[in-house]
Image 1 (cartoon, rainbow, N blue to C red):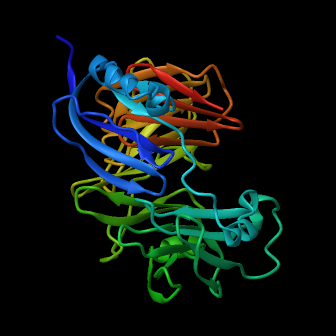
Image 2: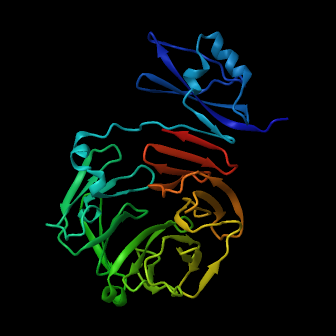
Image 3: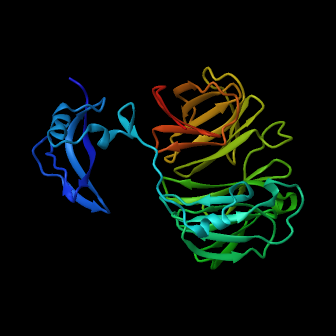
Length: 364
């Protein structure tokens, strides 16, 4: 007997001002909400794992609706369906300011605000001619606020779990602002970080506690962490042996009360915390890791190698979940997660969605 899914979403529409009707398979009336010219119906019924449901299909055919109108843009990836849609046609205020190749952009989680600032270092090694403006938009591109940056050299910006904008400076100072550009406060990553200057930073989220933190990499290739920006206490992470240049890639894993940095040096992967540095061997993972992405629940890590392979492990690296060859040795522009069940790799004019059973969807 095929495995069943308990929830399904059906989208029907008005045709000549008439709702094209349908009947829920289990005989229950669906909950219907009107969204513009579309009718969105949420139904509870059983659907086979491959997405087929003959009773629903026959019902739609009797009303003159073709299945393609309902499910044509959804693609199966195992038991989950995905689709690529344009959520917003960004407003003209965004289009005027968002010169993306020249900007640093930080988007908050769950469709929250987007911060944007010009970053001349992306296109030139020369120091910026003037202090940048920081613009804050809604997720649809509606302007919320902006302010002139009057402090030190910025290394990175990002959002905390409470939608405070965190601005990490080269001197190790972190300044916080609300979505209206109002200054909230500052804290330091420590005197040693200040003395050696910050060259890179990550703002991270702990799904267990719901808090946010900051990790910085200094000019002498040491890592410092503040695990909770609401109670900032800087700690030095363990040294990585022989790290004399920036790592190929690195990310932060924060679970429970522990925060780790995972990084690669040449073909070696290290996991460090304030107390130890551990070299990790990876099951059948040939090549050097040049990009990595952590799932939102911090339970899975995707690694992209210089051979074009994507390896997915549990975040403690104890179990391998998937290995997939992209047939491209070019580093993706972005490697991210869609939910906690699929990895998305983006190159110029190509977006690849990869499931945990080596199944995949390609979008132009």
